[in-house]
Image (cartoon, rainbow, N blue to C red; front, side, top):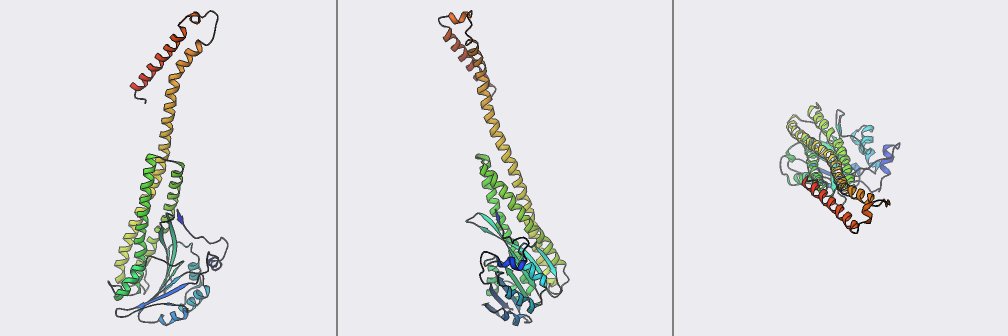
Length: 350
């Protein structure tokens, strides 16, 4: 199944964010770089972020945890973010989307991870603010799929240190989309196990697992489909923060998104087909049981008739006075039973 965090209905987003399981402090890390220099550090005072606002370098500010409202409010004032953007960041039930505010672009994505111990998919919202030379990302908790990107920045591998902040956003989106393939691979393995179970020994637990799988596919579809609109919006955006040279990379990640969507649809069809297979399998097993019971009934019906006739005990039944009548009746019943068994076997009914 898919594990999602839900806020309480009717509660303001700021309050809902603070009513979580833990009130752990947010972790703020800054990565500042250009082609020749690189700096990375974890900060406690959010005011340190302000010095990077107009710097000529690329600055990536990552915030893990959404419980410290003072931190978010100060960041909002320093970077001139709209209050509704902050509300959307705190409300973690947002649909993936992209909004152009002129001087910056706001994006929401769903990052998936697979909990191997619980055998379930976990969904986490990732919000990003893209400016001319900075990127601010907000995550619900520590742990993400961006470690390889951080390593590329540290070691100056590839073109990431030579490119702007829009290229950094592309790499983050690409990492999220590529991780979808890993999640879908895990779900594909789960489908194979369920199919094997369907063929061999379908049970009520199998039925529950199929319904759980169908719910997973519905949630995945809701997470993946809007990503197509988000990337398409970035491609068509006339904002100065997205350079034309990044367009070809966005088209590439758009193609990856279409592949993920096609895979999700295929897995959904397989999950629906598995439900039909389960019902057919149960129906076939019931038919086999009924077939065996019917054969036994067909064999014993004439035997019951013979036993019933000679169990009437009428006074003038001549067979009742025979010395070997009992054995003749048993022999007749055995002959009828054997004949019927041979007949059914010849018809290949069992």
